[in-house]
Length: 450
Image (cartoon, rainbow, N blue to C red; front, side, top):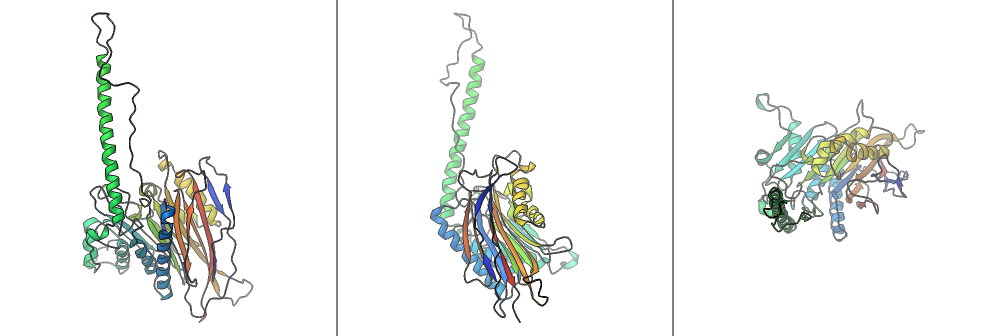
């Protein structure tokens, strides 16, 4: 196996919309190497979110992505299912205090942590998800357990097993199935608590300014009515004397997102048999309303995985990140998976991000459309077609794309000594929410010799 990041040149592409900038990455086709005897193969691609990743925290983001890749590869090398490998990667990402998932997630308006997570198995097409879940350290473990339990068939009395649970019901189901509860005090970190306090102060200030503005408008309306009263001395309309000026303007303070507020985490995996899996986990937006559920829990929005089939020549796996409401209204994970069935994966993903996301009619009233995806597609092929006895290899194409300022990713194969990481950023002059960056690479995974 050999893998190459493949960033050999970067150029700006013209697009159908003048507001969209697409970064094209030219990928060089790597040569194949002989796989070690008896060594299991597989590949993982993870992300620590699409949002803004400061240079000061770049080392921490990259480090957690490396650890997540290593956890997934360890599972694959041990012969675990693709779903177990992708879950292992997500647990590592959830446990990091620098990501907005699991521990250290954004706090809602009440100062509580409510998490969303989902997972999909490309082989069985089964799906498991939790939304607005509190009191569980690793929400993705509950989503994976829901997926596994659902594969066992119907419950007693012919009941259909759940695939998506929310709130208190999700918590009770998790505990009943042996997943330990986690005290709320442990879930919040000093980073998330500090961010909550800052955002609460900004919100209180914004609400006060808005209230003052409403009162000012009322006074102006009253003064305008009063100005119609005629002066007894000159017979002309009298002027308002409330001390306000018609040209006064009040600047409203809006809540600023911290670097982690859009950092939903996710991973995609392909195992030795070509089975794919995808997962995603998120703490949601800062100061969200209690009970809010984002794309990370919703079918076709947060993640998607589908093996090769009669109508799908490629196996695909997708995980999304960004503003949940934007991703939900465009069903982006499913859209990307469908687009990747065409021959040119890079062009297909670029057009999807342009036309189905930034240019989506469902988001026509949005000033900026914020999101990102990691995608993986694979197919069986022969390294040397002319040699009939040559064992087929697994060709894996992996890409990431985002409209946010940056996106942190990591990737690794089962034959690599360590994972590679990268923080992708929009090019200078590009506007977040109106521009698209896209990068990626290709690798071949040879079946091990017996």
